[in-house]
Length: 475
Ligand code: TXA
Ligand code: MG
Image 1 (cartoon, rainbow, N blue to C red):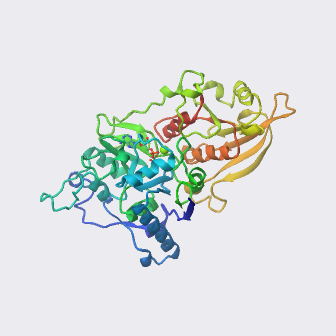
Image 2: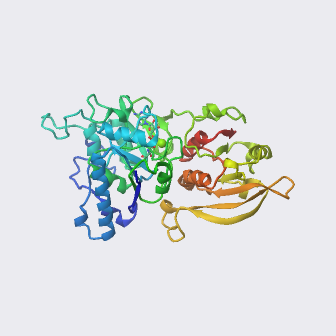
């Protein structure tokens, strides 16, 4: 199968975003959770009911018309094909399929090599689409089957979240009705389905044009780091899918936060792009708890986990050694004993010279204190000089390449690769998966990563992913 990449401009946050669609205007009676709204008339009410997409023929800007034409083509393909389409969202690239057709959803599992007991997130373009899937098959929102005017069918607990955090990197669990319109393969037999409305206008327009919600996991091969650029998708899935929509680098860089509000207190099932801080600020969510196992996975002190016990996820080919921010011995860089272990045997993958890599964040010096020569020839990853000022969507980081010196400082012990993701946690999240993938591409055998302290911000998501990717954790 030939894999085609179609470029579509991601216009999020720019004035030209509107060329891809707009929210339908309405009279105010029908906004999110209308009953609440009247009691609380002073709060700003967002109108997320209906996302409307113009036809390419009505679009004067030629580049916008071309993008809309491409999205129409992809939408039409999604309606009939059982092969999924990769598309950009603000978090990571998704591998989308019509969530109502079993054949299409099975195509996702086949392309990814993913076990089918892991449920998929359903992506909607607007609240009308979501509401329609809260009703059983055969019922529509304004259907003649009911004479009563419909009240709000979205559970009340989610209304403040939707109001403040949608569209965006937040997935909510909703009750899946008996006789659901969703293909059973989406939910893996659970009584709930995960749903999110992406902030990416491009993604919402694609969903609208597909005419159905898109079930979409991250578009990586199972166990690999999630893709944050079209090239990453191609690296993993070339020959397994026909279409990749290339909207450039993803803004957030880590996946959505997954929450369950159907229990008391509500819980976070996966930390992600929306911080726990932001959740706590929403009415009804003040007591939200973490329900994901992170600390437990860290293991005892410095003991490495047995390789067989490692839950393979977000993993590059290289062995990842994570230094937790609280690890006293690792404040100024990589420990001699860890480096010695990494250099053991001193032959890398496939008999090449060994390559040792570092990903730095807050305070490690260049090369994480290792003896090096020749570092400083920077190669830029993602974006170019010209678009570096266009916001996080195109930010880049540098990879320095040089040589690691042996203990006597006289001979070369290995190649050395150094990435600095910087101090800003949003930038760290944005570049993390891309850095892991780039170091793989450059042949790293071991990657030492400087962890950050995980508070209630996006650092929780960064550390969650790193702990899953790591074979050894220094804590
Ligand atoms: O940002 C994201 O969420 C990306 C983009 C493409 O939207 N998608 C993504 O999908 O990360 P995936 O399949 O890689 O991760 C989905 C997560 C899994 O942890 C899964 O277990 C959880 O959501 N999930 C989905 N439906 C669920 C359900 N009904 N109950 C519990 N967990 C669910
Ligand atoms: Mg994933």
